[in-house]
Structure formats: structure tokens, C-alpha cells
Length: 447
Image (cartoon, rainbow, N blue to C red; front, side, top):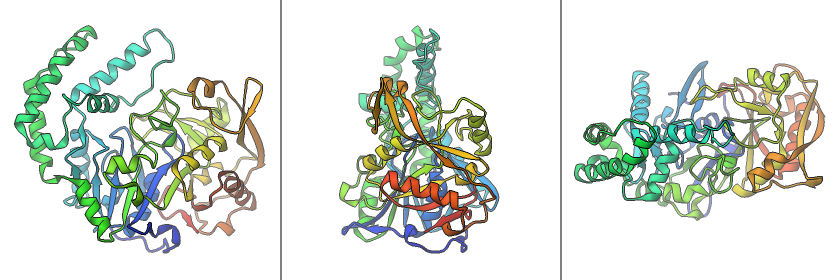
């Protein structure tokens, strides 16, 4: 795919040296779906590799290139650019069926995926993980309560749980080691028998599962390697590397709105462990944030809108899940949560996306504090129950109007839009160096 020449080379595109290596990290600062894929796609040609370090097929990212929309769940966005190596690192849980489906789609479009590297340490999402996922959600919601997490049903949580349990986990390297594979799948089926029987699920056919996994190994085996060694060699040789986060900070299993989170470290802190590189290599952290907030599934959302304004934002922003198609919950921008995410990730600069969606509103509201039990809070509670009880305190701002899709300079934005961005910078404490004003990769303002 040809590099887009209309996006000029600016500082935000260039990898930053940490003194030992040259890297860029892109992470979401909200509850996901911030538009990270578009930014990664723009940054990719300036790097030698694009690395997914967490998550699985529960994290979808859409790109619009020359009016054509493409959706990916596992393959890193950099695959669209010749000479940029896509890497699925050890922190990713891989659904081989979904990955092969994406590779086939890319091949049909003439996009070469031959350089894709898959970590031999990456966990495999087995079919029984998806069954477990559905069973757990059914049991959690059986009493009509709101205890269900609202997962995508892709087996991500159970796969990570199996990783922690160790003995029965299947890793990518096992797909090309038949004896190890058979042993682990047989043990997994034996251990899950009681749970599946109690849940009314059919007994697992270990033989069929092993045959399926061996077929995955035949298809993907040429891509499976030690990606930690690969990446450290690249960094040691001065090759710039781009780390692409899936999900987002407020869904981080340790630092998000637990238990309504994903099952991996979705913040920048997940990069060293999830990619197998030392923390000293992580520099130039770009945090991606929507001009408003959205969330999919259960969990607290202080600035959520339950009125027609929320519905209008949903329709204008096409706020439906890339993975599930579920309508996203929508609300005003939450600067309390944003400040928390900026500090947690050590963000150097912000990429503000979907600013164009807010055009046409007479007045905008921005959450600047919370009120809990009559007390004013300027920080995000660590407990999800407390967060679910907070009242958002808003600062009103004058809205802006007009078609922003053709704007390519911050100075050419409506004055009210410029003030909105400056307000975000003031509260976040870091500059906004990228502004998205449309879905296409060219509809971007870079400073």
C-alpha cells in the first residue's frame, strides 16, 4: 500500500530515542474504541515493526483508507504498509481461526503477510474457552443482577486464566509440538469435564480438538518464533518499533474499573511483559482519547448520557462495536479519568480523535470532578462500586459548528473547538499533537 503523501512528516510521526532504542507506544486512555488503529496506521511507515502486546480477538480496530473500511481483530495495523513487520507478541491470546480468516482476507486484497511474526509464547484461545466464557456470563446474569462483565464471548478471560493455571495452557509453540499439544489438550478436557457437565454443555472431544490445533500449526507454523529475541535484536540495531495497545487503560486488569475490565494489562505498563522487552525501551507514549467517552458492556461510567444527546453522539460517531456490533454507551468527556490515565501511562502527548462528531452541538459539557457522598473528588476512585455512585461535576463549554473533515490545521478549526482542545490540554497536563476530524487516515491534523 502506498504511503499517504498528504500527511506531512511532523514530529508526532517520528519515533523517539530513549538513549538505548527508538520506539513509540500507542495506548488508549478510556474504555477502548478510541481510534488507536487509525493513528497506528499513520505512524507505521516510520517504524520497522508494529507490535501487539496484549489482548486478543476481543479488540477490534477499524481503518478507513481511501473510503474503504477495513476491520481487524488480531493482525496489527502495520500490515498494510510494505516493509513494516507485524508482530503478535507473547502477551496476546490468539484465536487461530480468527487470525487465519484475517490473513485470508488480506491475501485476497493483495496484501503480503509473509513477515508476520507470532510469539511461540503466546497463548492459544481454544474452542472450549469460548464455551467457558458464555457459561460464566450466563451464570453471572442468571439472577437478573448486573454482575455479568459483558464480555465479547471470544474466550479471552478463560484463555488468560488457563495461562495463569499453566499446566493445561496451549501456547503457539505447542501447535508445532504434537506430543506436548496432545498432553495439554487431553488434560484440559479432563479437568473441564465436571464444569461442562454441570453447565449443561456437551462433553469435549479431545481428539477433534487436537486435530484442529495441529491443522492450525501447519498453517501458522512458519510465522511462529521467539518474538522477544526478534524485537530485542531490532531495538539493539536501532530499528524503530511501534507498540500497539489493544483495549485501553480503564479496562486494564490491574488498574481499570475492576472487575469490569479486560483480562490483560492494556496500559503502557503491559508493554515490557507483553512484548518481552525491557522497560527502558519504552519512550514516546501517545495516549489516544475520544473527544467524548464511550463504553461497551457493564461497569461504571460517570459521564454517561441516557438521553437523546447520547443517542445522537452514538449515531454520529457510528458507536457500535467492531467485534460484537453492540451499541456503545456514550457520554461527555471525563477529564478526571483522563488525568488518571495520563499519569498511569506516563503519556507524552495526546491524540484526540472524533472531534468532528461534536460539531453542531450548541453546548458541550466536560466532566472535571466527581461528587461522592457529598464530597468533591478530583481523582478517580479505585473501587468500581464507589465509581458507580459518583455524580459527575460538569463544566459547560460553548459548542462549535461546521464541517471539520477538510481542516488540516489546528488554527483553522472553529475558535470554540480550539478552546475545547486547550481545555483538555490544561487539565491533562500534556499537549494534544494529533486531532482526528474524520474517519479516513487523511482526515487528520498533526502538529
